[in-house]
Image (cartoon, rainbow, N blue to C red; front, side):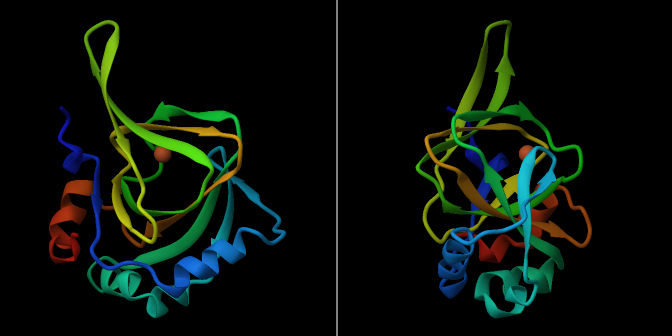
Amino acid sequence: MLNTDKFYTPLGIKASIFYDYLNELVNKEHSWETHFGFDAIQVDSRWIQVDHALRAVDKLQPIRALGVLRVPPNSFYNFHKDSYRLSTINMLIKQEEGHCYFIEPKGEHYSDCTELVYKPRTYYLFNNQAIHGVVNKSKPRYMLSLYFANETKYSDLQAKLEHLKA
Ligand SMILES: [Fe+2]
């Protein structure tokens, strides 16, 4: 059994109206830009001060930008470590049947594998330097994600945001 704590950490403060705003946002027409294989749109940074969880995070670890990432239906986003991010915070906005997995190779044929099952309105610290991938079926999948002002190792982020953990 894998210890999931090294891959992701849920936060205690839930998103309220920001979550509803994002769900409406993804239903509208946008000119999506390609961002490391994802379709992406920027989200207004003023939400960082409006949303309670993001404001609390921003005080301890300043946030540079918010965005929505879209994964197309019937796709597998290959297992990888991010080339551009050490850690982030994610919140699932909407999906039909999507799964995010973390793996740790074990021997020749198998990897240990664990799934991050996103709960509604819940933010997760996310270790972008652990190997992860996404399988997505039937409908587009929308995820809130962010950049910190300074790239920070996941374990350091966990320590900094210790008292915000669920
Ligand atoms: Fe990634």
